[in-house]
Length: 343
Ligand code: UVW
Image 1 (cartoon, rainbow, N blue to C red):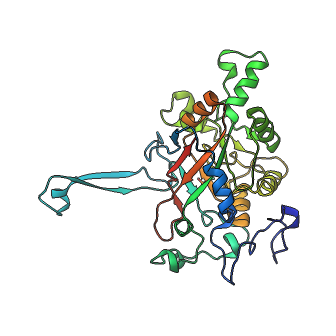
Image 2 (image 1 turned 90 degrees about the horizontal axis):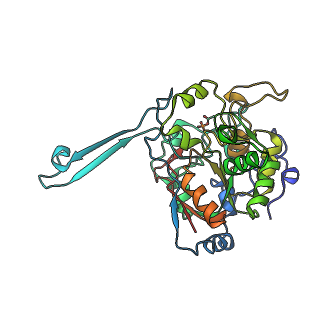
Image 3 (image 1 turned 90 degrees about the vertical axis):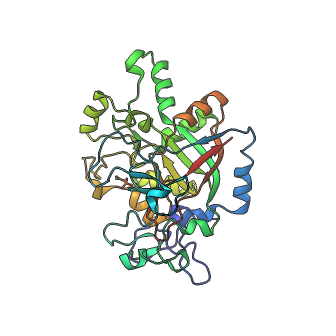
């Protein structure tokens, strides 16, 4: 049983609620964080969700972001005949890819965002270039995504919280119609834990320890082929997501989620807010440092949830078996999730 936020053992120099050391074993620093909640019983429960023979990919194409982003290059995908590679005169093809792992569907590993005042990552680990450059996963002491492979990847019960669907249903129930019903993911709605609980109830789903919480705002569906309206809204830099507050962080820990994910840009709503409610910068993100660095809870972003939403609506089932295996590259900071929802 994992202690709740207020009962977590004190970690010197860190605020209450820091989970460093909790999953350490045999004197070795843990590198998996809340993936430790995926016990054999939890995985068996997740597998029991796969009973309808339906599998849905949650992966946005690597090149789906319909416009350039500062600091995050567009993927370069080079396809070559075997002759062009110099390998063989035979007929056939190879390809090479160069991409930033944060531009499309992704996992943020536990080293992507640190506890800002200390610059320490999960478990108090100081992340260094030398550490990240470890030649293989076994010698890599940074809590990066490649360690998931030694643990068998991620198999968990996924739960979709379809905020967009619920908010638009609510708008219709309030008598709105036409464009007034649309809850746009670029209007910067801050989804509270009360709303998540209400949506779960409305969808008839209950959370269990070890679940992966997946929140849909509809964002990837709007970004793939951006209209002039989308470009105009992007200028405001208001992106819907889970409300980035310490209350949200506490709730996410206390629910014992193995990970969280969504189609939002940063999972948490942007821009972040300061404690007095005024707009802040990325330095003041709340859920990134709390989840990744303090809890060891991976964050999934820009997952493509349109087809999942449609299936959940038709089937009335909002829980499923979720599988995900990041790329296996030692020192991997972010990765396409290769995520599947199986019903
Ligand atoms: C933000 O852009 C805030 O998040 P990430 O770096 O995880 O994409």
